[in-house]
Image (cartoon, rainbow, N blue to C red; front, top):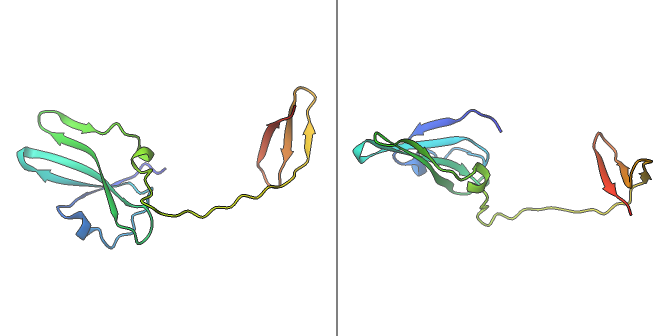
Length: 121
């Protein structure tokens, strides 16, 4: 994840950000000045292209308390896919397994740079 982010002042984010493609992993935040010199911060993203903006509160700043941020982890805030269907596939294959001398573990030889280990009884 990139450490850069956008902080945008917006009184009406649904209107001002409606044409932007904000990916689920984007770091775009909006802030709004509230009464009594309080500033609220929200993260803004879309689950997928064509879906509505999602705005989660992430913090507040006040002259009394300073900056107070949410303690909810980044991906925990974004785990709801709002009904988006995902397509996936699983393929079962038989791969050669060679027993090592030192343990009951074996190494699966895969095409490519990946090597995985498995246990054999």
